[in-house]
Image (tube, rainbow, N blue to C red):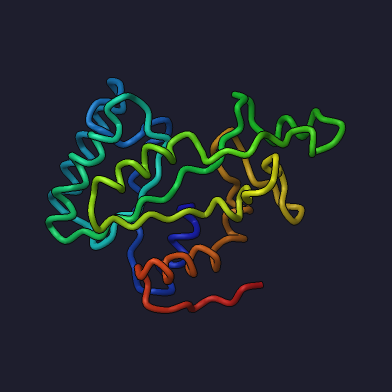
Length: 196
């Protein structure tokens, strides 16, 4: 969803910084490589706190919720607006959804059961422990509730590139929707983009 935020940021005068490392959830201890990255990230956030921190994650580990509360609570006290974005619905397989679509007789053969995303329950639990945190979800456009299965493509655009990563092409179709969610959450003052 970074592309959404960058385009929205340009419209609203934000400087958007991507502070992610592939394969690492944000926490206190998360493997050797991720632990080092997360330590550096926490130092950066404390040294240069952003006005708004928007994050999502798959949230691995038993201490993920407490870790997030421990990290985000002090940032909130310093005036950082925290927005936790639900994790996207996740394919249960390890292969990419588009590779499945290449092999399948029909693209619908690669659809997978509706779910809230692996990290969403822990993100919501962390939000419940952090007063003033905004929780948001884009999942109603990615895998609408009421469907038995999550679509692989919407409007001839592939949704997923891997089990839990969205394609840039799909994300670009949701920019105006994301902006509206941010306005509804009172993170942005007004809508600037037309729905197409």
